[in-house]
Length: 383
Image 1 (cartoon, one colour):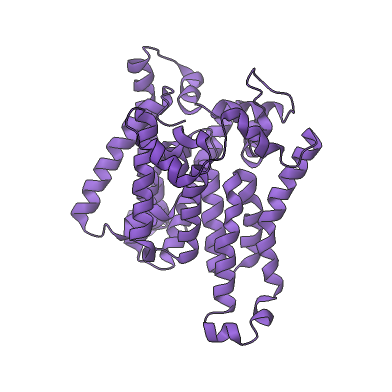
Image 2 (image 1 turned 45 degrees about the vertical axis):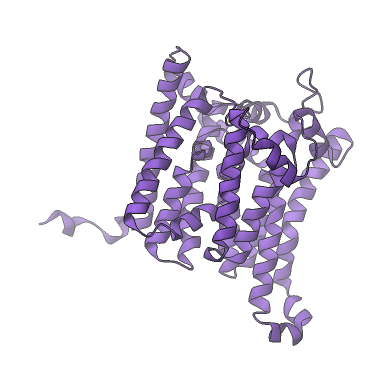
């Protein structure tokens, strides 16, 4: 009997899942190998065992999340700069703590959580893009998410992969009209990162679009159309952020403690246009690189704004602009841009030519490899 006849149809892996898993395994193995090589060549240090693996992926804020998962929140500053861990949002360290009960090592738990979230993010990016585009475009969207020059942070002990997974899944279910799922996911988005509250904007747009599909419909009993129980989903993100604010009040006596503590990281308010112009100074290579990528991202968003759903486009623009209101983001813009998923959808839609797609794929893979080597050895290029 032929082998094919022995296979049960239920055991067949869906094509998109196989594609995602293949891309994930190849890129994560390559990035880990680059991490080992970077530590050996750039630092002249070699590690062995679990310590080697965790050191590669626990860089910059990763140590904060490991300590937060292990020790919990404290109002006490941890250094002379008065930095405190309640500046960091709770969902990711909570998941790391849960995973640590099985994996024991907190850094390893963080890496596992991040990579699981990356796989979830890839799956929902594929499903989300498939609502409006063909399979090839959906696959390219996943590929460009994974090959973005700072996409290695999705596997690090950081919140980026969790954030993207929650946001895209939330918008996917909103587009499908499943407002219970969208509301529940929307509750958790601001518990991953502060900009997550912006999820309200595309949710409100999508809810209004579904309930009032035209101007004529808007004029005809609009309030009755909008005032449905499903509208409660739009309040869930506020409830999520409110929960963290209440925790801050219990800890520090200040509902906005998590915002005010940002000043100890140099988080002062600035005007985005002036801040971006200031960063476009080649004297500081790290800041200048982040500024160039920011300009490129804005150009892509405005030139091809019709390539993505308006709600997602608006959210993407907000996610780019929010960091520009703070001077402290100057060394982190590449990491912040990694969560702007509409960029990857736009890129997928404008690279239907195979030659363009291949050239861009190779270029992005090379740049991500270089940036990985710098990031894992604590270069200020990506903080």
